[in-house]
Image 1 (cartoon, rainbow, N blue to C red):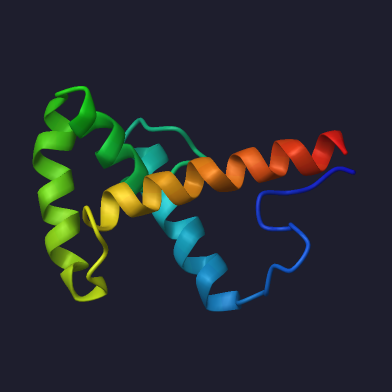
Image 2: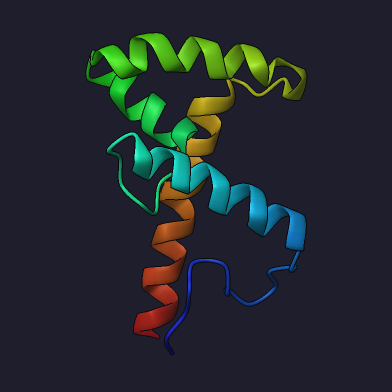
Length: 95
């Protein structure tokens, strides 16, 4: 089974969500990040390793999304969700 990142069984399609994620990943790539990673996830990884991008971006992004009230903040939650989703894709492709 060859799956794209948003094609796991049970995924709901939302055009606006796809556009938002594409825009987020494009911005990250333009800032010399990985093309498949969002700014939030990158900010969390950079913050964990003490990189300047994380020191600046993580608090800023967490503040912008404070209304979501995620334990540990938006960036940590989003990073963990991306990692979990990648693991599901690998398992689905190998099934």
